[in-house]
Image 1 (tube, rainbow, N blue to C red):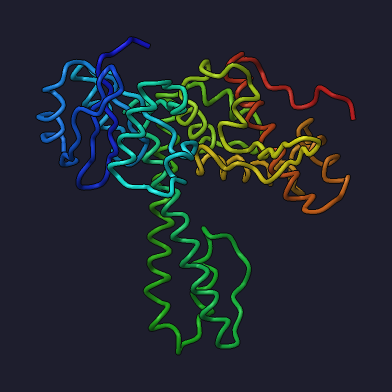
Image 2 (image 1 turned 45 degrees about the horizontal axis):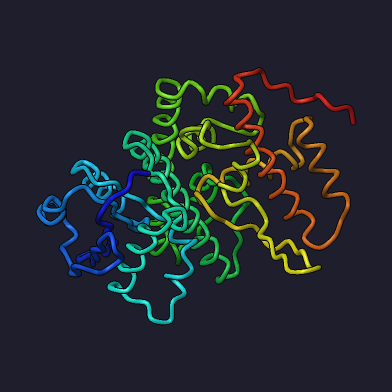
Length: 345
């Protein structure tokens, strides 16, 4: 990292952001706030010579960091989850946060646990997947609402998939509830049509822009949605030192609590991208489920589940998801053909 005579800590908020300018001797030479808008940011920070600017990741960090880098500044975007000295401070405030960010950036930037934003094209494609996920979850909530409302009146609706829900239950809604639930059924049908449209768009994007997803979909249970989400989230597979680092990056690694002779494993960290983690867990459910394909990953998971213990099934699914993330990484890096059965049972 290049040495700068000035370091700026920037605590970005929705309307106004606090900044703290620290000179080469570690003295605060200027403090203030600036409106969180491109014009105001440009006017304020273009007046400084090239500096190191430290800020936390957040809603505005992507466009703000690009704006500041275009002015010649070096921007460090910190991982807010790991800055305990900021989020757990007993005197937390925007002004104090800005100064702390500046001092950390000046002394040792690695303490900020820097993150790297995705490219804009990747973020746009990922926004499509996130929108689909939101529509799917909205449909699930509406389906649960319809089932719960009908059950409260002593009726039950048949078990069916979300895609066929409207056609299956339309004639089974009690007449007295139709006024309340009819419009909800129409909305569910419209959302199903929208989800299918999203799926077609995702299929086209995966094939045209990200041909590497074909390597990942070799694994039965991994569809184009999961493969594309994986590629867009990881973006650059060569930034990891080892394949195992991917599981930790996606929050599938158990937390560790080691002290003296005690070495306990806790629940997974749930760091990283929540959507991709849920998609991988869904794939793991299928792989170890009753319709899962015969493969080494399934056999490994079933052996693990067979050991029993507390929450054996849940722990198995998470472990399979973590192993799946590593397997996907290896296929992507090597470009080799996936062979489901290499280890004899």
